Length: 261
Ligand code: IPE
Ligand code: IPE
Ligand code: MG
Image (tube, rainbow, N blue to C red; front, side, top):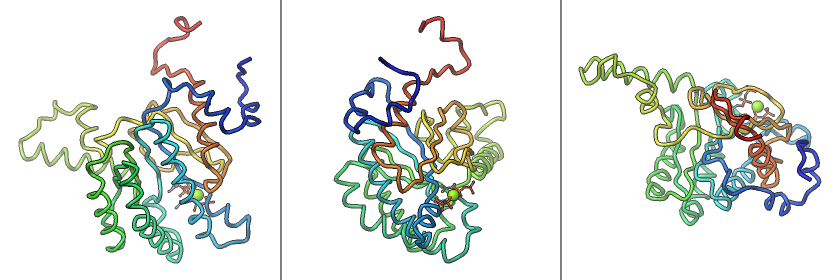
């Protein structure tokens, strides 16, 4: 009765979808490009910030969904370095929203056992937002039920530039030889050095690009693109993405089909 076509799944209830999931085949790390907030608002003739605000509810559902399923790491792209090129009205509302999220969510994150980390050029953030970010990181640093990483003022290329600079400094200081540089060494200098690479990347809103997110880490990640706009991406949509992930055969360059058929 199992089908290769994912559309019949759309008819199932959320609980039926949850039951279909194989708990032994869940991704350990899910990354999400949360896109489409502006379009969600424009469709309702609302200001773009209304879409960003509604998108916070989706973030909450992703956090509770990962905790419920036992997914240990969730990395969300909240603001790219390129997003600074948006009108200042939008960027300052977004920074305000970030502060609001951190200040109102901190207690709940602690109760839930969530460790929060920020990655990106945080020095570009307004001082008060940065203070909230650092305080929340500190207050949750002992927790490990879910590693929630928020990419803010983030650029995948800048992350690699920063890693190369640190490596060159080590070489210059005589602590490292060029021959010591291999993939695992580079990985140690990335912002995400404490996390495994994502198993699944979700991008909402119908765009099928990476937009400078986790360029190194996504080398063998399964990509899932959906037309759903971020504020509409809730638990049910997460379950659908996970079911699709479980249909994929991850080969990492090898030949596996002889084993599975
Ligand atoms: C994603 O939604 C959130 C950020 C990039 C900050 P957008 O604001 O990009 O929404 P669209 O893509 O314009 O609909
Ligand atoms: C990517 O979305 C960045 C975030 C979701 C934070 P964008 O809306 O900025 O990406 P592009 O411009 O469509 O590639
Ligand atoms: Mg967008």
